[in-house]
Image (spheres, helix red, strand yellow):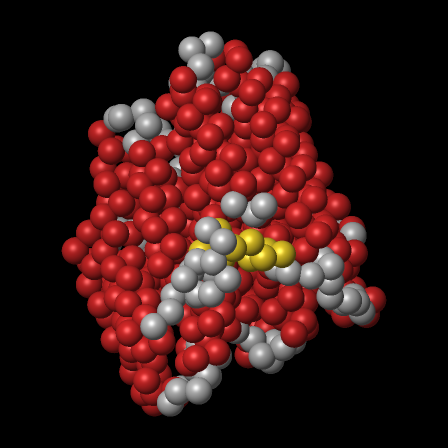
Length: 527
């Protein structure tokens, strides 16, 4: 019964809220999440044999609500359950109240429903409620900065989702149904120009949710807000933004006759560059990681639009990899900033000595995000580049070079001497959580081909000569990155000037209108 993946977390959320004993709440949360994760893995294995379909209400026609678990959605359900298990483990001994656990489990139920739903209006409802839940979690500590960032996140996403609502309303007018599979069959018989407008409306909303440039102004405020719980920032960057990528994949298949792949490839390249440049300009470790989410989403978007099966497979695998190494980086950053009492990267030194396991997990995650040989990011980026043309390959190389430069800067906090050189005792649950993610970053590279076959039933192979070439390029990139960091980035006045750049709410709204117009123009001339 697929509806249990939405219903069970909601019921658990209510139970955890009404139980007055915090220790009981923590134990129940951990045990329940283990059970949910086990169930997600079980459904994943069942989905490998064929799609699982549940019709709620007993209706066999389009009148009912259909839930469907296929290869892609089952992977996302398993990923969601696993990452929530990690954050439950991470926060097991934290001083979190009942409201925190209530909203976290509600959030999980909404995400599961989104991945399973085939009804485009239900997707709208789930996205909207999840947006409210995330806003509340961002404002959980109720200080001025988080309240402001949370409200900006809520309002800009509310504005954007209206485009999605108008788009699905137009689809309903054309087809008379809201089931995505049935609507696609009906629309395949229509003139393509009939659904240019709903495509532009829906893709504008999804592109903002993906944080594509110029619609990414909200993301640093949401992911990098100072006082949001660390686990919330990790889930926002590692998981929540993947909902939009998931919807992008689904709706690109839905509007199969409209091909704007070149347009989204260009947007992906621009997003990748803007993300790492803004990350280089930051000194706040949380903002550095937030802007790198923008950059990595640019790479994913680029990969998903390359007309090559290997590149697209690499792009989907990079979604999983990004969830792992970015969650690890955010959770480690939360521990580091708590121990040192600051998030300024220039004031943090000697992390490896003071926090050995946290430092080790951070290094593995850094090696993952930079595409270091034998780590998960190297495999996904290898397949992305394998099907790309010469120009696109160069762009990916330059984006990855920017990522390497930024994380050379980020890794400076791991070494050196701090004022207090003694080791710090860290909660064991936290250390286990970050080390699990760090180890996955390594095993996802060593067994990358096997992981891809296991997850997506796709057979891929790594060419030894091509991979050795990648190793050489990575080594050259590290050397070049260190030189650029030492002689330019560290003392760059230009980067200091742009470090505080951000769009106002009015500017973000204007960017939505601009992007919508741009999509319509691209459809008119190139689709």
